[in-house]
Image (cartoon, rainbow, N blue to C red; front, side):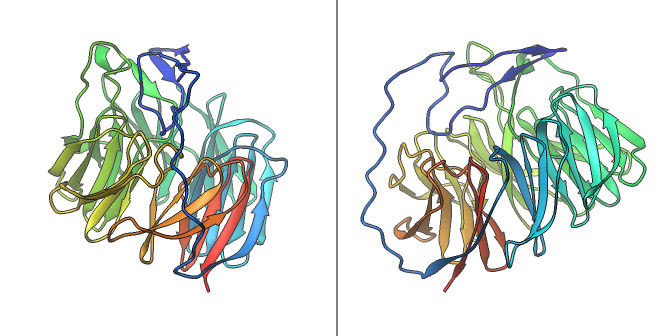
Length: 382
């Protein structure tokens, strides 16, 4: 893989590495491993396509959010849309006319994105409400909750804004250390559990008071190791998996950890390579390793329950649990439905051949996939 670097103030940008390959210290290779052969197509659970939509012109999606029966999606070219997840029909769509770096935050009415020139733009449906200039880049979608907009920036600071007026309420900064010089140019971790805002800074989870930005707790998921800055990179990557007070996250190519988010106490952590986000159920936490192996870790203690190499070197992304399946999209545009119990293949569906870029999303019984070319597909059990 190629390491793309660019200094911006005190931090260094690192390109989004493919989850199919293990990170090496700036090494490159022209020979790619052969993807695992797929068995004959089957459908043991009965899934059908019910609608499709598209970002026009085709543009790479950055991030998507589902709230109730609404899907919000932002693309790198500045396109922003919200559609009905039951029908796939647009509720509204606009073009901001400016490239985006991160997005989209969405609470069902207000939405927020961040431009490449570091502007936070907040919209009330299809109308811009306000914008604010940020002091650093951000690769994580803004988070909207409790009448506030929260931004996690690449200099490892967090800012809270008033959602209606755009007034800056507070800023939390963590002093950057020499071993934290690198940051990933990909979405990190930011969400709310009860009345605590939880963010990932380097290899740690922090619980912040959303009213004033003060720290309530801090838990280490992974510590920097290795002999160079690239090997020591342990930023937390999204999406995270949450069930009640249990929150599980991945540290880039370093490991997976689960915490009690109400207290900030560590439940367990395990060393495991990989760069894609997580999902889970009441028994397992599911994550893709660097070579595409899907691993189910026991939620109670982090020990391995099962693994499958069915998608090895097919570059699967972050999983989502849907019914009896773990669903993953791959670089060729397939959706793979694997059994939550043992990883056996239950079904396989095709979207388009540009590859599935984002983790599949659920809205009720509708499963939504978004492709690299901006295709949006809704599937539902028959």
